[in-house]
Length: 116
Image 1: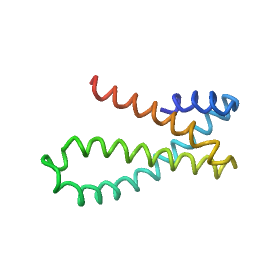
Image 2: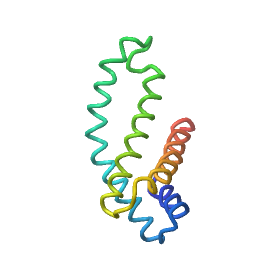
Image 3: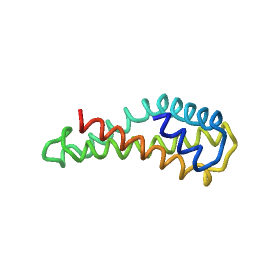
Image 4: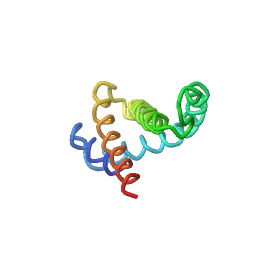
């Protein structure tokens, strides 16, 4: 995922390969660390509220989709904020490349899950 976002950052923002790599690496490390804790509580709350309305409860397809959407949105937000704070870039400039890089990363994960 770092490689996919590296190419996206480099292509959109025209940063050097080194800076693009560091931005992708830092964004993903921060997102992975913070996201792990946030997602645990977010998904517990989600399942507490939503599962009783779904025919297959926790294992309903809606929950699989919601997990990907929540993780995607959280990753984009956390990575964009981390890079903004460290590199002093504007969120308006960072958001689209981070969103597209994460979208490609999540599509890659989804395809890998479906093929496997």
